[in-house]
Image (tube, rainbow over all chains, first blue to last red; front, side, top):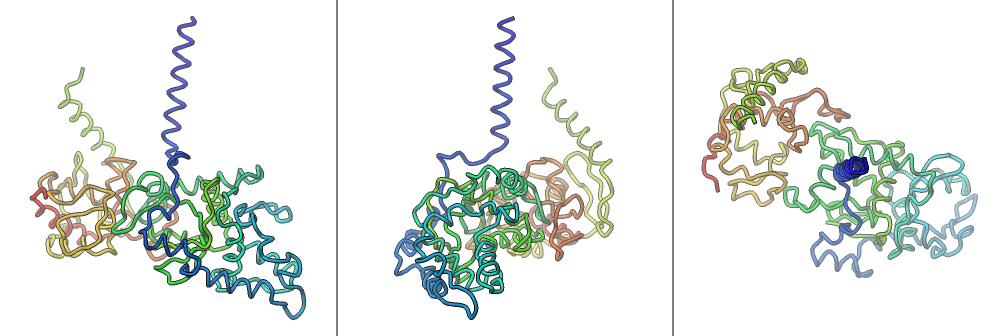
Length: 259
Length: 154
């Protein structure tokens, strides 16, 4: 009887182990930033604040931070110096009590504009929105990403994970097919990388400019020929949330440089 | 103990049964018959042009070289997610190549090889591609004609 129990216990262990393998996510010890896949030259460009072109966005952000709107307050009037934002970006997307759902950093900036500054929201991927998120992100450079620690986010993270694992588009590929299973390979000439969004907004050399994680996700979605989510779609925030929670504990690099 | 040969015959027979009873595909795609692990007859009776096929394979728009490499010395960027196309024609028959292009997922549900002649059973396809296969029947035949010429394994 005891032997039978041992056998069933080991069977259970095998089943549990197999389902772990099927999940196929990258083990914490194997996680790498996209920066580690870049050339030495591009890494040096990112690491030198005077050479990193993303810093121009940060400087633009500093101007916007203190600019007083016609009616209402500047960011600095409530928040003080931008350095008070240290540790904020590494928690986003974060749960919003009023909306009862997660919002990303771009949405948080726009909520602040509408609710507290009597200003219209900034357009998705606009220069000013990228500048402000680059400035806020920069304050947390080097800090560990904490996104997902809030337990109210779990259901949304799970939805994002489902989307990551789901095959989509004319090419019928899921994010996981490349970014979990083939991150050590090259798609034509380009390193695939592990989908850890450690440095957004990033200055992407291919874009010749700063861009958000959502822009990068839309690039991949068009790559597999699926219908991209709009910037404010709940599915987009869920995917961002899952990706950021995947990178929990990794160092923030904003503004990162990518090829 | 079933012999290896018998097992493979059994497998082919059950694969064939499964495939022949598969539902009808999107209306603009021509029907085709799968026998074992192959589509023996050309799609729409088209005659493939090997040089047109090579042009398709090396054209990034058609995605082959994103994952595969091959004997294309002029192509600087070639992927390594999938086997080299060199020697493909010596490893597979024309009919086997045709099924692997048309719908490789029928042979291996976990493959990352897209189904190049399929328009149904896909999720959230972008508007520009909705209802269309990646390659037309003629293009499939062109690529099959080209791949069969790749006899040299390097």
